[in-house]
Length: 287
Length: 301
Image: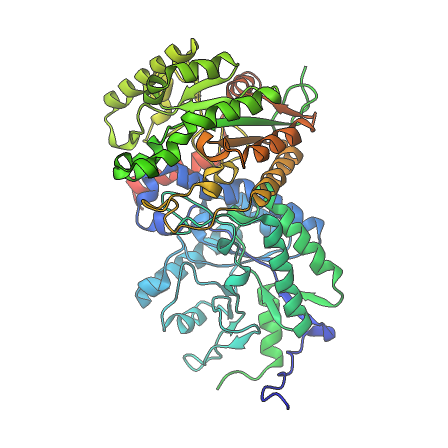
């Protein structure tokens, strides 16, 4: 008996690399739903839990990335850029990529197209004025985006998104406004630290206040995720948050993961924009 | 004599590179009643929490005695009144009683005068129970009101252990010291369980004891490496049990095996800090960014 599903060819990666790894971190800080609904201004405790990310977790994470000679992509709401400009300068100075993630971590699906344009315009101006960069990448914050979002992003010079869940390889979004569609570098919940480690109260996350996982088991899962993508030659990216995964005792999880990645031969460790450029050069865009 | 500042700019006592505090939160179920008001009329469910006074407190204290450590207890004033003799025994064993408010009130829903009255009443009740005026405070529930640090100073407190944002102590504008606390260093998120009313809301499985110990040790080892201030937060009804007390003891023994970590009470750490590390937090410290955020909300561009 033969399988009706022969293995699809693995994507081609530069220099015959076995797989692509785009380590990615969302530096949300205190932005998000509670800032959007205003309740955060009366909730200093919750604010400090978010602010821990840029203030205390990020520098240690950058140290760890440097120690393992890894370059990553940071999706940063520009409210965080405004209030922690020095921290964000260090991200750039150490060779990492900055990319769009809203201004206050807005839910794009709940915004009109004009509101989405305003957020993007404001973010572009802040990145440019504060840090002298114009990002090429975008990850949709909090939940979904709307049907117009992908096309709108191209107006701002965005060439890739890392927002979707439904594949394990990059792909093109449909053409928009007679231009090439965005490259999508999909990420999956399986490698989102919120699903195993994040725990907040008032407001509660997870909503049922399920338990924080055993760190050792989280590390095992994440290493198996990397190894699966490596085995099959796919494109892997992560949804990590410094305020969650770069707390002191959890850096060890990342250390184990980074070691595992570096011990595998022939891994293309790239930033989102590098993967997008490669994908554009190597692949036929969607019709 | 003391050490050179750590990477975090903190000076710890001579020979010590980090600090560890073992704290106990003894609410006698008032924390749970504040979240599920009918709990007090459900004898079976309520007894999940009342177990603490009946069995958990003494079991924790025996372990603290066996390991020869002194700890910091956060207790609502009302609980100090209810359990005077029990708390007197706890204090007599060398533990320090600190305030967890009066009766699980929300300070963000009180007037300044009412809040001050309850804070002072809490201090008095705890002083009566221990012959020592509490110096520290932990916010029981709800938000931290604007300028609350000034109110706590006015009520006679020197420090708080209520907020997050860092892993070393920092100063509020009023010079109240904050010893930051982290949820993953509490036993409650891992172990609290009741069917109806549901705690936790989604009835998640009770965590693996071995996994919790392993997480806490991973955190402690990292705090030690970074020169930070580790604050373990235990509850008599959750880890003062026959099956989990071993986890508490193993954790304490692990801390004690690291002679370069200063195992002290919260009040000792606060006094050390105020004397040796005082200084306003940097402009992009979470406290200052929050102040900027409040200004933004008040006067949007």
